[in-house]
Length: 458
Image: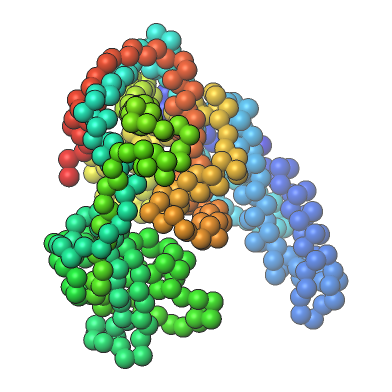
């Protein structure tokens, strides 16, 4: 074995590896014997095929596998020993074609050339005690508290049937009948009746049609796009499908008619209201104001933390000097696309490089603070996620919630996304304990304007 290294520049090195017969012959012969003992080949008893016959049939492929396995092991060992922090995977050097004469009877040496992208040593900026960030300390004014008391009274009011134009917060009772594929009535189709909160309707076209209409209004809709798309939710809350109906094939398109409109009539502050509320913390209007102010403060603090997180992460990304070779990175993209001629614009290349830089920085920070995520945290993440879907359904079936969580736990993409989100949240908590915070008082009205101004333009 011989390994030679030539540094092209601080971000790129070339490595030449020569695999000699002494590096792989013994392993190859061992692999042949193992294969001989387990091979089941027509015309021979297990383990009794002559070695020469085995070599003719499978020797070359085993030799190729053995050489590349040895190459991979030696390469990884070298990178580890030399403490080379690589960018992506090594790429075959351009202009070098290895002589791959795999001869089982006259063992050869093989020389490979690789270009290796290097992630240089760097210091992460923006995470020291001397880094001070402005933090919005939101003050809650009496007008905001008054407005939230009115919302509280609406939530604790009682639904009342109305014969008025539909509003965003109304609950509609819908009589629905399945349609044929051409959206004509299906005589033997599925019929159902369900309630839906207008504001929770996901299909914007349907929601727009419903608003300002009255009882008796009919419309066509896709039941899988109306609210929560989860099949278990649709079966239980919209189709009202029972266990006995589980094998019935039901289409997506339905004709719906509004048969009832229910509107929440706000409660009135009174002794009876507080008695019916039965909340030990709220026994008077002053108690209610205090609780609402506390909850609002917590909510605004969460939003302020989100802004602080953005400030910290933006500063880290902007001020951390981490160089990546654009030429090598472009080759990595082409290699992943398996197309050397794939067109990559400078804008796309720069965006991809910035994304990779942030990924590398985050991974270093995760290691620095030893951030790990366990199964229980991921399950709780999914549980909170699905609970947000069901917040308007107080009598929900928790079996549906648990089924959703279990499905997500088996979804690799969902698992990776949840793990990343939890790690980033933990990272922010770590960093806020290190950096300095300069609290700046701001009214809730001005804070909301600030948040709105920071939203990306549509």
